[in-house]
Image (cartoon, rainbow, N blue to C red):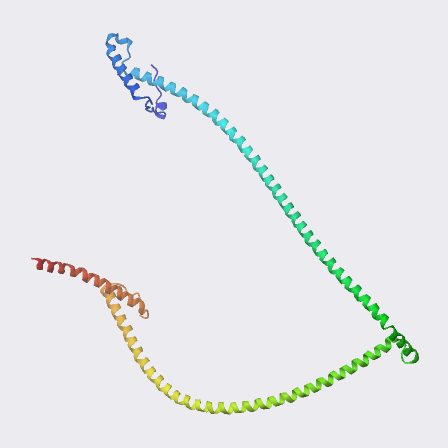
Length: 335
């Protein structure tokens, strides 16, 4: 009988599997096995495989092992083939996904460019419409200006025809006078004289106005200065009274300051005494509790907090010590 290799048995342990069948079928199989065990005595011993034979059990296990290994090899081959097919499918899906992603990116870029083109086109259309409206409004405005200029031209032509007689008169004046060469020189002389007259008139009016303003300002200044002098006299009188009152109040304030300084010195002495008391209490408590003196002498707040914590601890200890006494008194009263 062939022996089973120890390495394979160690590496591949046998697992107990339970059949997934109905309990009624198992009960019927159990009854049938009982009948067969009873019929075992009717046959010779060499025709029946005994259940307690180790060689038969080992042979059955080897057969089961070979069948299991064969089934495992088949499963591994089928698994490798399935894994290969699955990897090929995954590669195909990855390629399709990459192609779809690239197509989607190209489509997204195309849609974005199309949207940008549509936006630019719509913006250009709106700009062109606005420009067209602006140009139309400018055309209308220019047409109105042209109409007004035409009306002014017609009116000026009428005025020119109306004043043509004055032009003829000025020509005659220029011809008879040897001072001017043409009508324009005559008009320029008239305009210069008119401008000089206007300037002189304006200068005279400005001087009269300045003189009147200076007179009015002088009267106002005299009145204001008189009022200022009267106000200053009143202010001097009030300041003199205030000076006297301030002098009296300054004397009172000096006395008050002296009293405040005396009280401040007294308070500072009391504060120094309190600080020294706190320091002595803190040092005494620290030495009693065998703690090092870490807090500085100037740090009064930390000293007070340390004393407060120590007093709190002492009160708690006192309460704890008083509880047994209270319980004993209550027991004595109850008895």
